[in-house]
Length: 435
Image 1 (spheres, rainbow, N blue to C red):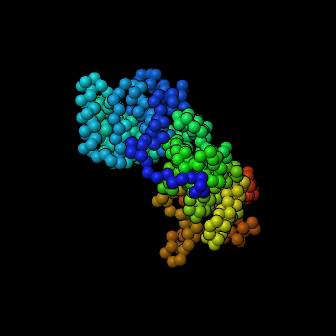
Image 2 (image 1 turned 90 degrees about the vertical axis):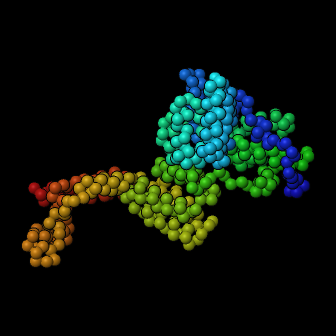
Image 3 (image 1 turned 60 degrees about the horizontal axis):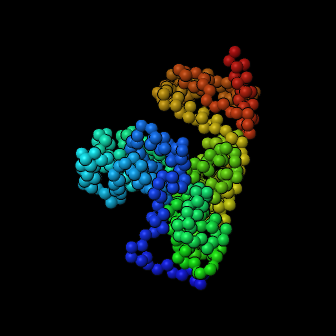
């Protein structure tokens, strides 16, 4: 590989990365995010309508949030000022607010772009409220984290949240073509290597341009790089995935819903995505146990057995062999009959228990270990079910004030079809015995 790629070395003084040099100069040049800036996009309608208010741009890195903020300032005729929550304190914010007030007195408005706004604490976030309310600034905040969890409700109530998506393959290909036109030369990649480069970027446009620049720097003259050579050169960058952040919860949600939706292929895809990103397989094992309980329940009692066995198999085998046991369970759960009847029954019973927590059990089902409790009537009239012909007495076990309730309603699917038959049989017997 040494003869194909040379060491990149240090950048020359004054060098600007390709991603910065290729930054769009007009909104029409922005790649992707058509749901925001397309002809019918949310932001396009705001600009064409009554005017632009404060915004929170939420999305993964490299999707154009900073670029869009700069272009917006130009589009609506505002001075652009940028701060980063990583390097900015309260005193810096006050200086920015004072500068915006001075501009306002001169008839100029200020668009204040705050990168990583979620890193500000609650008090710092509150400092934006007065200058947003009186129009001193138009705030445009960028965050990679869910604003609902990371930003004050007061701040969110004064700003509109626009969601940015990771760039899809088509948008990234378009960005590569623009880079090649800008540089006046094609990337020395065959088709497979080009697709691999795009996959390495993982939806991040800035990352893609950085990778492309590295290819131009390192490729030997008149050579065409193959996918295998590209993978060795970059040592295969890991997908964007933070096990403590949104990507983690997004992928486990996708896996859970694919299992619930009985789509084994999609479920395997999301499972593989998480394994490939370095997720703890035992975490996935625990989540599969939860799926077996919540979404399959008694429709297939073996689902929980299967999930627990897979977790134990992974404990025994470790990676990578044990991952196959978990993958088997993903398929088993996705193809199993589904029922949340027991789950919903438990929730309903818990709600009733919280509302009626002071009610005592009926005396008929209480033991009478002492003379006093026997005198109080504990256990009087209790029928031992095994002494009846059907091993079913039909007694009422609810508190006297509640009488009989029904929480569990099994569907006519899987093993619960048999349970429904049993319940129907017992309901018939109970009615006969109580008449």
